[in-house]
Image 1 (cartoon, rainbow, N blue to C red):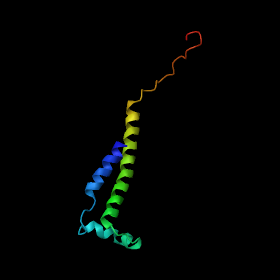
Image 2: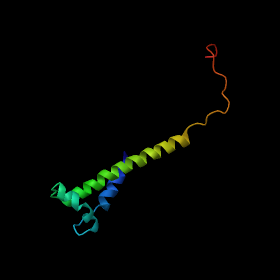
Image 3: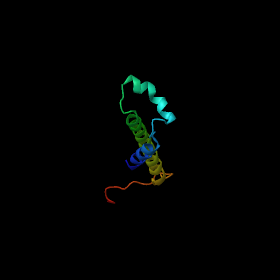
Image 4: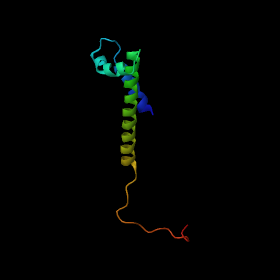
Length: 87
């Protein structure tokens, strides 16, 4: 969750802040199709949305690698199991 929030905050800072930004032109067809009035807000929300998914995926991969690295090693040869009398 924290990684997703971090990625979203970074995307907020990286999103276009001015209409003169060249990246705004990439969004023109969608802005026209859906009659968006606040183009910069819409684009910024898109950046944050996509970055949150990327952050979630990054967090998932990170935790899976961490779990893989910290799990106890499996024994090479199975040992004896405890019987009822030993417990």
